Length: 418
Image (cartoon, rainbow, N blue to C red; front, top):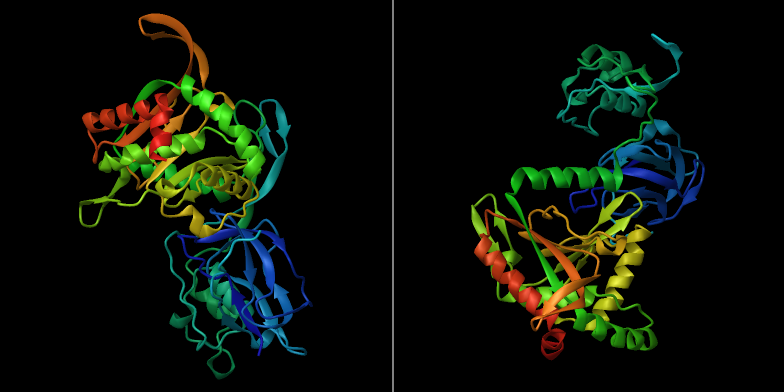
């Protein structure tokens, strides 16, 4: 029997995705669990496997289109079947991520854009017990019509397209003209989607929910620079990895977090309680082509320097290829964002809600510095820490920063604890 295969719930808060590439075409035979599409969510690029074997009777979306969880991706049937007998089917989420307007200056060009007048927040209930053709079901979804509320006028009570249109309170969406210019000149339009859309939503959520304050410090990391210069050769020879400053900073951060527990916490909005995490999962913000991804290094406090370096390199490569496992993007307790690699110094990073704090790391610079009552040229690292003032006060944050500075200025402490 032909079945409608719907975009499954992938978990991790994913509600929609963009079809990056179809891996099959209409008429192809597919095996059980064969991947049929690459879909980009706001987390990563996911290969979607089919929960059944058969022939692809129809694909419902073009590459580049955004589909919601629960929308039909394809109809699959056995040899000789048609679209008429399709029934809905879902799949378990995949375990792994794979990979002319007239103005005062005359007529200006326009482009056609489909603008929908659909009301937001409407929930459509689909029922396999309703007698309706697949085309009627699709029309009902487009018009936000609940098929279970309609009495069909077709043979044996079957619901027809006319029944759906008569029941719809929503006008059919029609293309309208959208100018390719504003009052000052021509403009290009790009959809806000994928990682960029997810980042925008998360940043607004954080800004609205968190009382954010930023503290900045300069750190003399001259000795740390010397230590890293010695160890990077070993890292390259023994582990085939480039040793950056991030593993040292992560170790120093986790050591300081253990003595300043409220920076490793979050607020339970429902119970109005502070949740103090007794594990140390450090998120690292990685810049990719269309935004930021923040994979999380689990139990970072218990890992060796070289292991951290290898894991950071692996996560960075996977993030840039959009092949990070969804589970690797969850569970963070504290985040580090490093804009120093791009030449930045200070900033006001936005807390990665619901975490309590985020550390921004700037570029190491040669600067005059007073040491032992003498002015010397030292290696100075700028740090910017933003924290949630609902959980933390300035005194607590100052203690954390003082401890963090002490570790980074005296890397032998980190090595001794390591």
